[in-house]
Every structure is written in structure tokens, then in C-alpha cells.
Length: 197
Image (cartoon, rainbow, N blue to C red; front, side, top):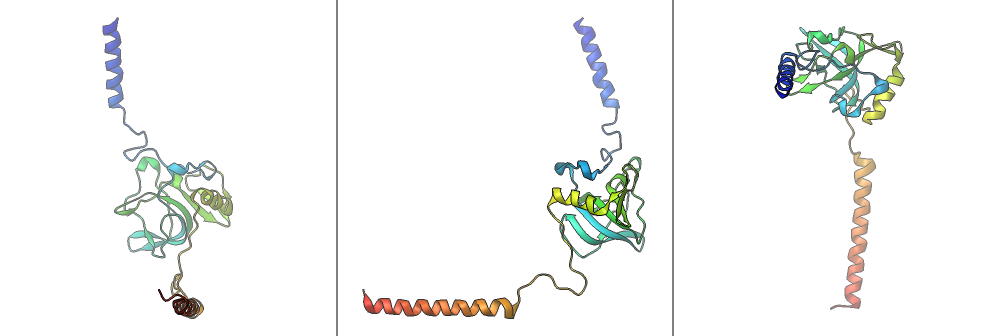
């Protein structure tokens, strides 16, 4: 009896070794983002809203806002190779607006799967694999933002980032500090006249 159980267990383990680890391919399960059921631990490192644009032979995303990741006004260049073909790469078209959930590594942002990209048209967000019904863009963005706590808009061309105003901040604070320092010196001198030790 024990020998038969051991043989069955060995056969079971051997059959597991023949089955691929991930049914969707080498990169794991295909991303299927549902904004109503997002898991904060499973969110990719870069979530952005932007417009696709052709840049030579590659595609870039000109960002409008970042829901996760570092905000930059530089276009986000997507990887040359789409994800595993079994996942269905997102059919991104230049000139269209998208909400993209992107994985990132040292080489840059990966091309998203169709289940991790939403087309933004006429105030509606539609997942590119059409696995979800269209929803209002503001609602989808709000659901993602409630988990990430971020909505960063990059500075536009020609605008400077946040800075310190010389006349409105530095000069008044400098004058106040000089006055406080002067009062301190006067009080210290008076104190030394009262008690010279």
C-alpha cells in the first residue's frame, strides 16, 4: 500500500514538473486591472495618464498626470517588445489618451497588456481588452487615486517648478531674523550690565 502511494505521489510531482509554471507565459499571469477591485499590494510601480505619440520607430507617452511613480514632464518611452503575446499587448495608437498601469525595470517601462490599459475618450474609460464595461473617467481615476494617494501633474514646458520667492519669502524672513538677532544682542548686553559675572 505504501509503495503504491509513493508511486502515485511521484507521478503527481512529475506531472507538475511538466506543467508550465504560469499559464499566461513566462512573465506570469496577464494583468487585468479592475479599478473597483484593485489590490494596493499588486499595483505596478508606474500608473500614468497621457497621450501616445510616435517617436521614430517607438511609441512614447506624453504624461498629463501620474497616479503612481515619479512625476516628470519627459515622455515615458515604452519598451520595444510588448508583453507575452498570450496576454494580448495593448493596441496603443498615437494621438489617443490612455490610463496605463506599467511595470518598470532598469531598461524602462514595459509595454502594457491590454488588460492594464484604458482608453480615455469623451470622459469615459474603456479597458482595451474590453473585459470591463466603460466607466466614467473621473470615477476610474478617483478609484486608483484613493489607493495610491497621488495625482502629480508635471510642469509644462516653459514653466518653472515650485521655488522660493525672493521678494515674498527670503527678504521678509531675513529682516525678521535680523531684528530678532538684534533684540537678542541688546538683551544680552543689558543682562551683562545687571550681572557682569
